[in-house]
Length: 168
Ligand code: HEC
Image (cartoon, rainbow, N blue to C red; front, side):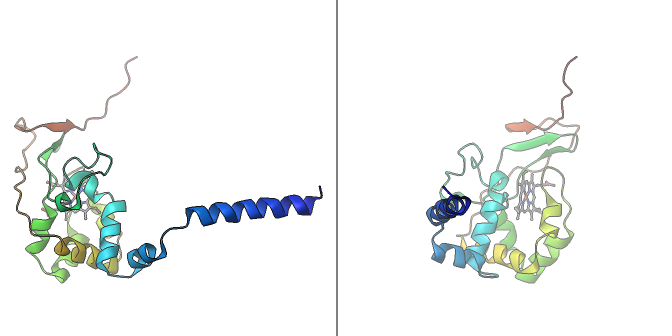
């Protein structure tokens, strides 16, 4: 077999593979549409917001109905900063306008493990898309426990976030 025939066969195989993994174009177009609700949904999903702000999302590998998304969590994160609880974002974002949200996302600095710096790295259009998506979900006022300072033990289940050195 000549070298060119081999290259040809490899290229055919590759294009077959690419065709097989092609996504539904309607879905990808909607997620790419700047500032759209569908893009907000996509960003919330891939940006990790559900991982902490949706109860059980990590444990169930994302298999949580959308009507439970972003309602906050009473599973705390405990570390040297005390114990923090992921905010109910549906409730929080309803207390502010879209411009206020963009400003807040650019200035907020929370305790760990919220990656507040990732909000600053988002484009304004993406922040607006997230806002529109969150407001498209039904209002939800599920309460989230208050922050507990380091000198007090948390009264809820919590994950301890303390780096451990390997024993020698
Ligand atoms: C690793 C877990 C984690 C991830 C991932 C995460 N958050 Fe958070 N988030 C938290 C925790 C915990 C708090 C509460 C921090 C505190 O009490 O200081 C918080 C707080 C916030 C706040 C501040 C609320 C306030 O009261 O001002 C906003 C806004 C927020 N998160 C949005 C998001 C968005 C949007 C995403 C996805 C891009 C996200 N979070 C991803 C854990 C997380």
